[in-house]
Length: 439
Ligand SMILES: *Cc1c(COP(=O)(O)O)cnc(C)c1O
Image (cartoon, rainbow, N blue to C red; front, top):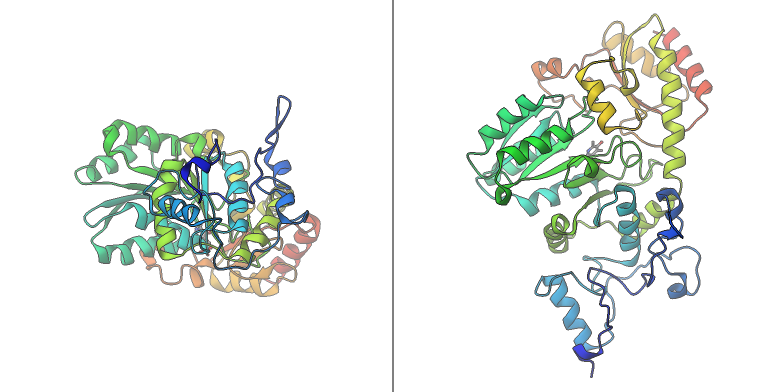
């Protein structure tokens, strides 16, 4: 019979599998290894998988226990009877080897204690919200948010008695203070940010949000600060360093990076992640093993892909900006020196990304002519893939946004959204040049 006395001296204190190597190699001598290096091996012990260099895809719905006592221990961890989560794998709605390795590797990029992966960016955001909000609460958020996130808050969660207040993405400390003061009359469990915002590219001052929250809320009532880092993370913005408690992702975009999967993630401290894990365990919003495996492959080239896309975008935007048929280019590399947005960028970001707004001279007719003439860039929504994508927010992603709000967000009929990929930059410029001629 196995008893507690048979447990190893150093029980692993989190949701973890036997496939995890005993001692993780995070440094060589004094040198701390960089994420790009760790993506090739971290969290995987080949000796536990017949020496397979790459982690196999574990297609199983359930896992065998070594003993009945071990099964009981695992369930004590899963149900929260014992702190620290399960010590082994139990059932694939809770976790699996591929997903655990992926979570470990995503945590490396954000320097987060813990991470969770989900079946989509929206299921990540929904699970985060369900874990923290109750009827009568107010969610404070920056504005605009990804359209489905706005809908989740203002329509779905509103049905359950949850209210919201917002401040514009570029808000100053005083403006953030004013909104948090108003909200602080009730319970505020969550401040939800998105930076840069879609499609305006407006940046949120995470440091100011953190300072404002800490000044306005007593320690025991402090809302978690969560941020959607899909557009610049993990390479160009690390929000946990600037005061966020939780980072969420659509891994569908740059992290997946090949426009061939849908997935999401959340990273943060163990205490911020624990209640979200409990809800994910209950409702099963975890990503499947095959998609997790695809993401492991994607992570090996993440830095290469994002760096190349970022360099390409800088070249393309610099060229576009001078074209006579272009009104202006909304690109984070072109923020006005001395402006508040440039100040936020300098403090929070290390790169301008590869997704930007191109405002043509004219309206829908000119924008559609441009889009229809593109030969290399593909006409599709989404972003962050190896291939360049172009779309028309006013007629596509933001079609249902009321006209006044469209005007306030600068979503005109002349706006084309572009996500630059890893093609040759001069080939892309040639494509945009011939498409502009067709306008
Ligand atoms: C795409 C996206 C989402 C939603 O992610 P899915 O993976 O499509 O569910 C959320 N936030 C941002 C900023 C996005 O771009």
